[in-house]
Amino acid sequence: MTPNYFRASYMAYKTLIALHIDALPIEPMQILSYCKNVVVHTYDEAAEAFGFADADYFRWMYLYNRDAVTFRRELPDGRVIYELLYDHRSYGPRQRFTLGHELGHIVLKHRMEETWEDQEADYYASQLLAPRPVFQLMKESGMDTSSPEVISSMFCLSKAASRVSVQPLRHCPDPELSEQIKHQFAEEIRRKGGILSA
Image (cartoon, rainbow, N blue to C red; front, side, top):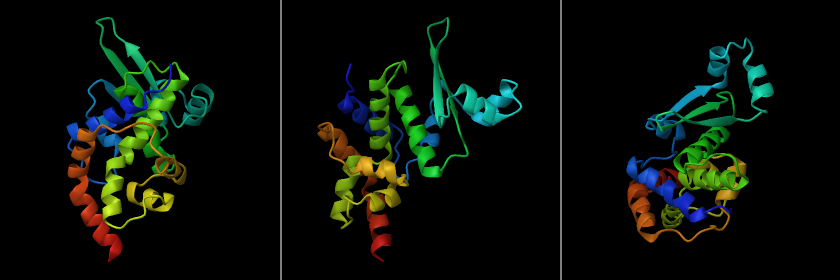
């Protein structure tokens, strides 16, 4: 299969709208706290739960040096739960994108077995943390949305994630959801635009 970028962005925007998120930066950990079928632990907490004395051993030997990993489990009653483990020591903006990526797997109901699922989860995280409709509001406020530095500062993303965010879209956005996102973040961009121009 190939990644469905429209679906990834659609679900990212629906997440922001459903939770009435209207402030930047967007915090994936806050969103994860609303997910009733998700359990989140740091690697240190997981190491302790599994009886490993050294969390680094658990992280490096069992999780292949990944910043986060999500396990999907189907329960006998048919319910699905997700266990998300992450490195709480990783660099803040990188950690936020990593958690957004894992959230993407959960929201998109991935089985986490295919490469295209990682591409969709990356796109979900990019659209969740730096929604493109907000770029238009930024332009109207005189901000340079082609600059990775501006995007990094505004959305609290790493430089690498910001470079991805300024690339052309891989989908045609849903116009109704785009307008809702713009309406939701309009006051925040007006406020931040005033701070930046002061």
